[in-house]
Image: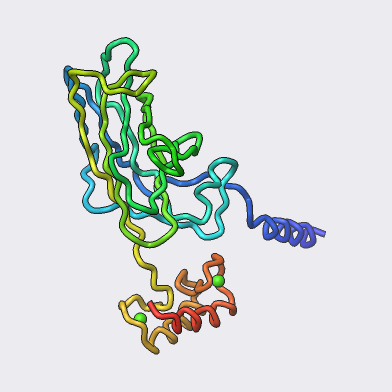
Length: 234
Ligand SMILES: [Ca+2]
Ligand SMILES: [Ca+2]
């Protein structure tokens, strides 16, 4: 009886491949510290950022509700806007981020509503930051290098028009989706017959490199998928 119960549980868990999950940041938080210095805005990295931040895809994960915009994409939520010290802004004003240029193929979504922002899908190039820690989502669907150039300024809270007499600040954020050469199982950068024995090894040990068809599982179908990937080249 107990065994049947366990089996039933496993079957129902297996059927739930599409269990909704919450997106993950993809690494440690990288805060963009926004500071008011008189009538100027300054930006600093809380942690030094060297090189582009990697966008990750999590095969098989499906996200709840509006977060489903990140399904099957490479994404990261590591960059977050954060206030450094107190703000004392004129009445009726706020802090805005303006998109000055974003790579083709990079999408940006609001941290909480997942609405497209900062020029994504025809949205406004201006986005108002509410002063709280905000980790927006950055995503792409293809390997490549991506960047976004932003201007942070103090503007009219209603219209978003920059206030006269205030200095703004600019920064460039960078991301990368490394070119993934699945068939290069031994990771030496070239496709050769040694990758076949490497795949057999990965299959036998259940290593992640075994999964050639990207379904998140290591099964015999990955053998034909490896052949396909090998023939397709990298
Ligand atoms: Ca190889
Ligand atoms: Ca597989």
